[in-house]
Each structure stands twice: as structure tokens, then as C-alpha cells.
Length: 178
Ligand SMILES: [Zn+2]
Image 1 (cartoon, rainbow, N blue to C red):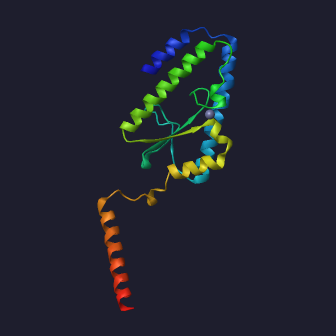
Image 2: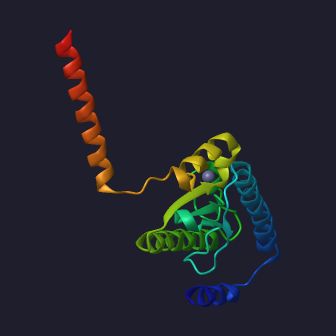
């Protein structure tokens, strides 16, 4: 709802040809990072749901069984602290600064909403894709295979400590026999 309201408010601002050219240029470079991340996920063989609209902020990818979501953020649109994110068009500078500041605020709100519902979030920034191998490693860590996830049960700790006690006792017996 808030989005529609905002979108309407924004459309009232006069869109000059220069501005729409900038928007087009930025948008076209923004679609690419998402496709590249999709390729990395394919390489890793991870199943995902694309753009689940029911979740706050419509994350780019969701991994329902792991309760994790992934956003691919364009450095410009989402105000990343990097050289690319710092580049603001000279025309309508204050418009862009305001717009990006609103995006940053919205992203933070979305993140806290998702976290309060128990979702874990990862953001891949456009500039990070310069090193795809690194992003892939991050993705692998963020998206463990379901069978490698151990249930978080206190008794497992108890079993581990009993096992180590037994091992120590056996060691002590063996030592006594020496
Ligand atoms: Zn960046």
C-alpha cells in the first residue's frame, strides 16, 4: 500500500528526458546482476523461489526450506558505500539523493520485518559480483544443504560431552595399564 502511495507521489514529479535516460541506463545494468546471481545459484544446484511477493520487500530469491532470502542490490539504487554507490547524477541531484535515502530506509524496514518473522537475509551487492568466486563461497555458506543442517537440540551437546567423557575414561584405563 505504502509503495503505491509513494509511486503515485513520485510520478507527480516531472520526468525530464535526461532523467528517464539515466533511469533506463541504471535499470538495465541492474537487471544483469540478478541474472548473474541466478547463474551462481544454478551452479550450486540450489532450489529457490523467485520473487515471492508475499514476503516483505519481495526478495529476489527465497529459499523456503532454509527460511532464508537473498536480495541482489544495485549499488546506486540502494545506496551502497562504494564508488559506484556514491555516484549521483549531476542533473536533479537532490531528487536522486532523496530517492536513494528513501530506498535505504525502506530496505532497513524490510530487513527488520523479515528478521522478526524468522527469515535470515543475505545481500549481494552489484559491485561484489566483480569477484564471482567470492560471492559463490558466500552463497554456499549462507545456503547449506538441508541434510547438513543439524537440529538445534540440547541433547546433542549432552551426547557429545558423554562421548568425550567415555573417551577420556578409556584413555585413562589404557594409561593405567602402561
Ligand atoms: Zn557497491
